[in-house]
Image 1 (cartoon, rainbow, N blue to C red):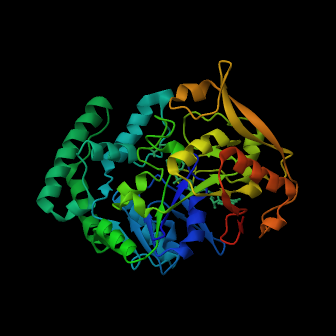
Image 2: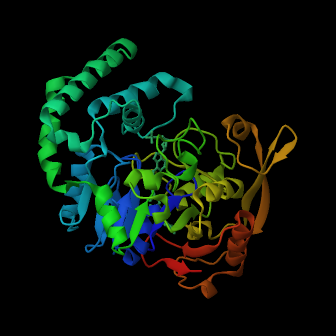
Length: 424
Ligand code: GDP
Ligand code: IMO
Ligand code: MG
């Protein structure tokens, strides 16, 4: 059995979509295991751009089976927009996509509560994507959620939905001074969705186990990044699911031992969307330059991404939690032309130096990064296709990252397209 999991090692947007698209060739089935339409995975094929939010990035290969696992929270409206968009671009979705009957559904009240709760948080807002992710996972854990398979048990569905709408309307009206939602509208909208989604729905846990047991290779697709993981990220400035590889077995329904290899994806620098601590953030002209050059604008919300230097302390920690076997560096080309490049090797807090990633964000917020500096390179790397073609300074930088994180690097990405990849 040779299955793999792909995870982001930073705060998301590491280029997972592109790498999944590149690696899909070696796998039979690609499964998303957590998150929802908060994700934005960009893949560029023959100059055409696709952004996947819920559907696994493997969908662009027309002979691969793609699965949305039970750990994902599904907004049907978003799902059908995405299916329509992909199909009108000639991508075969209907034949290749399957959806877990155990995945939780995102309802309009989740999105509304996400929005109004952020508004009332003021300065301490998380800066969520507004896709209803947190409130939907709250309902899942509180055991109030409604799952895809329950759409087909009408009495159960209607009763659960009514209970939820009544409860959420109390919260919306009394706590947030918002307008109540109309139960009937949601019921009829979701019963329409139920029929549209029916051909895709099955017990995907059983399917993935059968596939894996019959020798098919499974690729587990992580969304967000390790530092956004609800347990191991910069809590509370995280998302609401386990974005690390730890989330994969539970989010798909396979034994943990079925994940044989973990690929960790990291940018050659760091970005973050939304609020929360970011020790290596470059709040200056250089940060802006990297933002522009790297096209660092959210694939889901269009918000500018905050940019900063590579943080080896955070990566070493993320690599430990995920058990990364092989790492992939993306966006090396974005650093072309820099005179010097920094890598964070520790945090200085009240005179003391920390070389471990802390559990509490206060230390991160109050600390100053300690940097090791590397010489930059002036040659463009976007057309380099082998390790030998890389500038010496770029190789030294990659070796530095490997030394400081303890990671074996096995691919380098030097541009957004499929071909811009170097075996390392
Ligand atoms: P994901 O959420 O991890 O899949 O990443 P996103 O798609 O949100 O953001 C990554 C962005 O960088 C996308 O616009 C990609 O097309 C782009 N990208 C991926 N790899 C590279 C690379 O090596 N170089 C450059 N310049 N862009 C890249
Ligand atoms: P991909 O898969 C980057 C961030 C949001 C916010 C926090 C919580 O494209 O890497 P949420 O809507 O999940 O409750 O927001 O998490 N966030 C992401 N940042 N990439 C993502 O996904 C993200 N998904 C959520 O900006 O800070
Ligand atoms: Mg993204």
